Length: 157
Image (tube, rainbow, N blue to C red; front, side, top):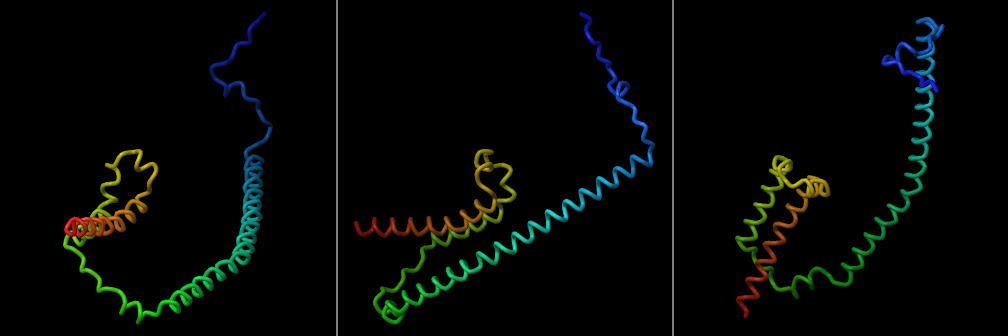
């Protein structure tokens, strides 16, 4: 059986078309026009769908806002601020350690975009820089409060 030989130059074996350059340009323009009309049609459908869904779900957002306001009013009515302020002991002043941790967290959150490429790849893959910055900003003062509580409980013992 004779084995078919393949040409090392596939361009040489390509079929020759009888279309001249003008006809090829006209076909390409028609293809572009068809693609543009398809994009416009699809964009119109997406826009219509988004408007319809936004209107449909706007009532839910309004309902959540009203429920939140109602709950806040109800909670405030049950425990008036004057009674709550009189019954609660005066708040304890934050410790210097808490201020130090808050400032360190804010500083690290500001420098995080510069340090981000140096962090481990696994952390960068699963956590975004914005999330890491937010966590640093919120967790640093929280850690200071934990240490303040621990110090107070150790002094009582």
